[in-house]
Structure formats: structure tokens, C-alpha cells
Amino acid sequence: MKWSIRLFSGLFWMVLSFSGRSQDTCSFLFSIPQKTRFATADHLSNIYILSAENAVEKYDSTGRLVTRYTNNRLGAAEWIDAANPLKILVWYAGFQTAVFLDRNLTELGRLNLSQLGYPAVRCLASSADGNIWVYDEGSSHLLKLSASGEKLLESQPLNLAFARPFAPVCARDDGGQAVFLGDPAQGIAVFDPFAQLNRVVARLSAPEFEVINGWLVYLEKDTLHIEDGRGLAARKIVLPAGHLLPETRQWVSKRRWLMAGPENLRVFSY
Image (cartoon, rainbow, N blue to C red; front, top):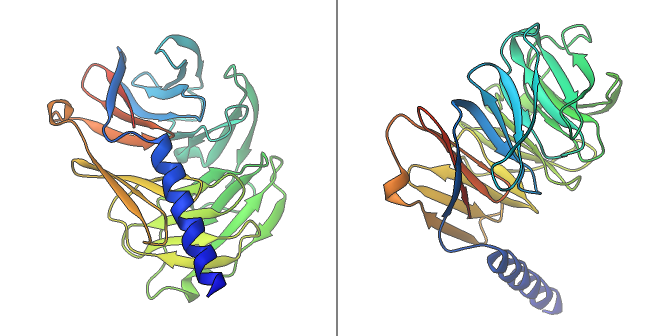
């Protein structure tokens, strides 16, 4: 009985705490006049984009351009992980290469996963301790690698836990507390900090999601969903209809909803 009361109390304060930091609606903040292929934000509200010219650009919380990075020798950059604003990860999928940048977008180093023996990587993420999480589709293992490529941790084969081959398209490190791998067809696999599978949460049709202190945040049609990851609590925010224009791409990140149109990127808070 006492355990049940403590559990209920903990959930109540967790929901209250998250709700207290969130808005009931999305608020438009500013637009960035740049054609954008991908966009994300860090917990300091800096915005990072991949421009049409294949440049990584960093903007501050007011939309002012701070600095940029270009590298055309590795093909097209696919996405950015800015969970650690002091060590930003840029993924060049065509060359299976992760590039690490500092806060000024100066290159710190790079990791060619094919050369390390992992040629079938589609999903990876920065870890809270400065290393990198990689899902190797060849062996169906989640791996934790150091910045030099040393294997630090390895999960059990995920194909043993699913009816079909597990094919995640999104990975997130939740501040060193857990790792989330999302396969839209089969669900989100949640691992502990030692790469051991803890649970699988319900299917998520959205290919991309964000994780904030155990809460899943994702977009589905015209709605922003915020769930606690276990289905015990949830909030929904209907996105402002006037901004849901055709021919746009959308991403959700740390406290930011980002929408790229033909000529600019619109930034909203939630």
C-alpha cells in the first residue's frame, strides 16, 4: 500500500513538473531565411540546420547566425545530433562517417564506421558522456563506441526480441539515463545505460521523436504528443493551423518545433 502511494505521488509530481515547464500551445518565435534540409535544437535553444548548400549552421536563441561548418568531401550531411552542445554530431551517411564539432563548429574529429567494421549503420546518437551510440544492422546490436572507435558496450541481439528484423530510424540518449531506439513498425526499444534492453514501448508511427527526462515528444499530423514513455500520462498540443502549410518538413527537438518551408525555417516554442 505504501509503495502504491509513493508510486502515485511520484507520477503526480512528475506530470506536474513537466506540465509546469510546458505551454498549452506552440508559440511562433522567429524565422530563419534559409532553405533547410534538416533542423534541430539543443537544450540552450540554439538552432542547428543543414542548409541546401550542405553547410551546418548554428543560430542562437534569437535566430542570429553564429557560425557555420562545411565539408563537401564526405558527401551530403544527413542529420545533426545537438544533445551535447559542446560536442555536436553530424552524420554523413553516404560515407558512414560521424563528424564531431565543438560549440564553434570547429571539427574535433571524425569516425568512419565502415573502417571500424560496421558498414551497415543507419541509426546513431551522441551519448551523454561524449561517446556515441551506434545500431549495427549487420549484427542487430546496439553498441557504445568511444570517440576513437573502441567498443565500450554491446547489447544482446535485438532480432531475438522482435518477430521481424529490428530496423530503427531514430536514436536518442536521455541524458545518460536511458537509450531509445525507434522502429516505426515495431516500437521503441528502451535500454539502460549499460546497453541492456529494459522494455519496448508501443508502436510510434512517427519516424522521429525527442526524449526529455523520460518523456517522448513526437509529431503526428497536426498534433504534438508528449508522453511519459510508459503510457501512464500524456499531453497533446494541436499545432496552429495557420502555420501548417503544404510542402513543408517538420522536426521536434528540445522545446522547439521546427518547420522548413520553401524559403525559410520557422521556429516555435512548446
